[in-house]
Structures are given as C-alpha cells and as structure tokens.
Image (cartoon, rainbow, N blue to C red; front, side, top):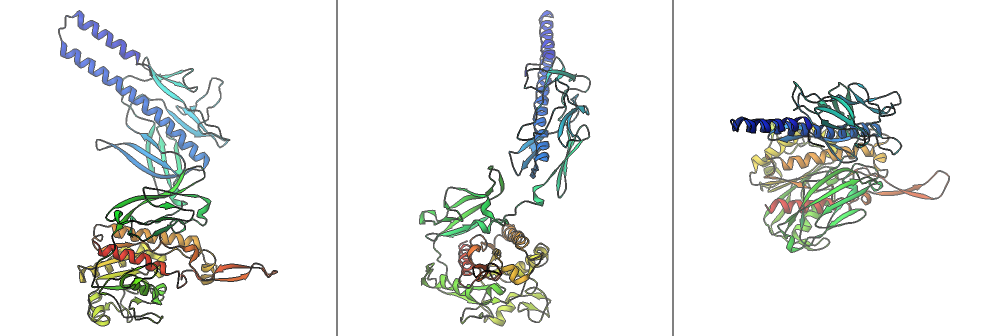
Length: 558
C-alpha cells in the first residue's frame, strides 16, 4: 500500500515551516513528526487488520457454506491484553481475527441471499462489482469467492474487487474519530454447540463446533515402556470411529515404526531414562487433521525393585484370576513370552483367588463397580460400618495378614461406565485419597478400559440397546479413559497415581470369543461373529496384564 498522501504532504509543510522559522522550536517539531508517524503507522495497522478480517469473514462464510466445523477458539494476547482470537477448523488452516474500538471504517459484512449463498455487503447494502452484480463471499462448485481489499489514500477508504486493477472510493478514513479503529468484528461468543461472530453492522455468523459430532480420541499423556520389550499402540483402540481405516492414521515422532494397524517400538538400553514425544492423528483424504493427540513415550530400564505387595482390583474381566497370575509371572519368574524379570519378594495379595486354579490372590468380583467398593454394604470388604468409611488397613488386616498394600492396581470402570463423569469427584477421588492416607508411601496404578467388541459381541450380550451399541460404548470408553489420564496428571494425585495404558496397547480387533453362524438363512456358508461384548478370551485378556506390568514398573521406578 502506498504511503498515505495526506499525512506525507502535511509532514513536508511542517518541515518547510521549521526551517523558515530558523529552527526556533526543535522539541515541538520532533513531537509533530512523532505524532504524524504514529498516526501513519496506526492507519497502516488498521488497514492490515481489516484486510485480514475480510479474509477471516470469507473463511467463516465458506465454512458455513461447505459444512466445515470449528474445533477451537483461542484468545490472542499481546502484552497481557486480548487483541483477537485464533479460530481452528476441522478442515483447512486456522484464521486470526482482531478487534478494537472506534475509527471511521467501512461497514463491510456478509449476508445470505435467497439463493442460499453468501454475498459481501457495504454499509448493509450489497457490494456490487463494475457490472452491478453482487459479489460472492463464499465459493461454489469448486470456485472461490471474491476477496475485497481495502486501502487508505488521501484520507479516504478505497476498495478493490479485482486484486488492485481498479479501486472504488468509499468514505472518509480520517477525521474527528481518529484513526486507531478496529476490525468489523464486534464480538465473538460461543455456547456448547456453536461459535457466534457478530459483525459491526449487526449481522451474526453462527458456525457449528466440531465437538458435537467429532471423533473422540483417548491417549494417555505418557506411555511407559521397558528396554528390549516391544510395545504396540493399536489405532483401532485410540479413536471412537467405526471404521478407522477409512482414514489415515498419521504417526509423527523420532522413534518407532508405523504399520497399517499399529505403531511399534522396541527401546534399547541407550533409550533408558529418555522420553520421546509421538503424535497420533486421524487424517482425512484431503490431508485435514480430524483429531490428534501427543503422548510421551517414557523409556524405563529393566526393573530392579523387590519386596512389594500388590493388590489387583477389578470386576468380571479380572475375576478368573488370569490377569493377576500373568502379571505375577512376568514380575517373579524368568523366561516365557514376554520374558519375565525374576524379581524377588513380589507378592500378590487379596481375599480372592479367582475361578481358575491359582494361588494368586486379588480383589475382583463380577458385576462390581466403583460404587460397590466405596458404599456401605455387607459385602464391601473395604468398608468399616462402625466408622462409615473405606479403610485399606482394615482390608489388609482381614484378608492379607496385615501386609501393607504397596501397589494398588485398579481397573473396574465397566459397570459404572455410563455415569463415569459423575463419579470422579464423589467416588473415585475420595477412594484414592483414602488409600494415600492409609499408605502414604504406596502407589496406585489406575487403568483405563479396553475397547469393546465391534463384531456382534455387544448385540449378543445386550440386544438392541441404544445404550450398548458400539459407538455409544466406545465414546464412553474414550471419556472414561481421558478422565483417568486427567486424574493421573492432577497435581494432587500425580505423586502416587500412575497411568495404566490398558486401552492403547489392546488389540481389540482380535480379542473376543467368536462363533460361526450361517451367513443367510438359505445357505450353508458361514460367517464369524463375536459372542461377548466386554470379556476377551482368556488368552487375549493377557494383553491387559502386559500393559499392567509396564504401569507397575513405572510406578515403582519413581
């Protein structure tokens, strides 16, 4: 944009008067020069911000036209003051809008006409091109809308609609109101479903948030791994989308190898003590990131702790005892697959031994939820009715020969899944606090939930239920697992509560029991369906033991 002629001419006049007066008032001259320079800079900044906001309005109008969604609204701060917002979308690059006060600015806006398309307006009237036609703000049929551009020259606003080939004079840019005005965004507000952009001319653009229908994702803030032991993070277990393979899962980081179904990493001894950031993104065919999270891969050396008592708590998935038994094997024995660590003095304690023939103790009862382990009931082994509270030392006295509970492994959210958010403050956190009060030096390993069966298991168990269809359950699993991660990162709990990546490392596509049924009622051909919604086969549920061992080693390495 050319220098603003009005102020340049005034500057020349002041300079000539200064020399004519024999340099009698140097300080006044310097003040006048500084004032003019500041006003020129203010006008240039104003014009730049207005053109930026014209781009922003066009992006918003196009997003409304094409069904795009907003993913976030972030304030832009400068010297502690909010000067605008950055708006991010499901598809396309983010935009930044700026706000302020005052100024003689053109009333540029957009309005939808009867043809359901968005057009530019000027002072609430249609902005017309040289042929007298309305100017489209949003593109159609693969074409872009026209982007007006503003400039200030000789104290007036000018607009072009042909990239500066021709300019049309608008109103005065300077005057009594000064030149430090703002964009034509009057306000930006939002509710649970939409973001509302109110322009200075009073028109309101309402753009839907992506949260209402976006794909939910769960990934712990960190994932512990141990040297020489391969870990896999399965894409299907990260996203609440029925067919994750219709998208691309993009993995970005300095370590590991991405494959079609999972990301794999085997740390070496040189990785011990290091952490690496790895980002997992679900990407659409046009390259737009739909949802994305970054985790820290925390590399641990081979474990060397000893003399620890471990209590595993769960519900029906754990009630057979197979998971606790496999965790014990990996920690106390050598050999096997994966190879055990041969640690000494590791005892699994608890009142129950499971339905399998095993002497590995635990605390797991089918059908139990967080409420069962915290409320006053005759069969709650942790509850002291006389004191009206949970007491872990009381439990140990009754069922563990008063052995201290050094590690408490908890994974029993399935039976309280539909109310998981409500119970965090009232049930889960008080339970964790009481353990820490009873065993200040103990640690808790807090697990998320593995993804449910997608190939018929939920239907077999729960029938035609809106509450137990796969997508609803998977979204609830994502919510629950994110709550678990938040607790583990909370300043109150992070010194003794550690994340158990039960979901991320679970291959849910090859985990649940199956049977063959006729593919139709008129054929001998068969198809395979899964026959249980939440309970993997005994062999496959050992994946939960694998991730649990990593979580225990992480908690005891601190």
